[in-house]
Length: 283
Image 1 (tube, rainbow, N blue to C red):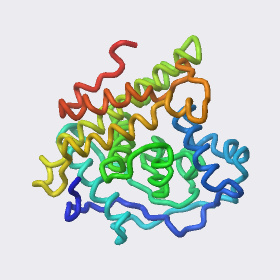
Image 2: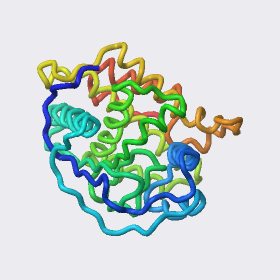
Image 3: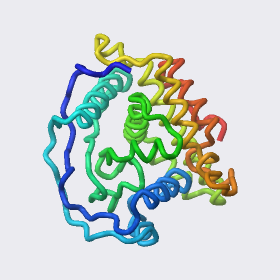
């Protein structure tokens, strides 16, 4: 994947190095468990305190706000270039698109949705319209069997930006209402799966269009997509539930199976059209 030299549009709130409460006693094992909780059971920041206590406890969290701008380290620049390119694509695809702010943090931080921690993996908070990334997630993702390639990382970022788009177009609110009216938890979970698979499809759509908005400064190839597919397979609900010999329970899926995640990522990439990402059609 080519990204060095890509346009940098700012919009990065860097909280790294700010004290926001650290996970105690958990280490890498707690982070992996937390990722499984997030990807399989859809734990969000509002329930982090309960999850964290089960993993070993959190330090005290204070109010935080970093400076919004352009980070100078390589990891920060990567996030900024990819985020800028994603925004440029969506500005062409969605009238009235408004970019989110991306927050870089370490271990834990306050969000508009409650307290967020690294063990949850990357997430989007619709309340403050911010994407939250602890960049240590890349190593945790590889431990789960995902790829360490640049596009695998970019796919995860684009997926979270996809959730921002869903908020802008009203899909997030519609899913919340449908879940409130669902007759069972399994029925409610199907709406969650559709939302997550659509975000995967949106990520693939971005990848197809990345080079078209940047004069080739950011480009994604078919071989890059293969690394994203490997990552999608690693974070499918069935793969995570079965990790370590666990029981696979399709009715509890909240993000989709490995096959579904790969299918919709590939569909978005093949079509390059967000209109092809109607994952709700068969619900």
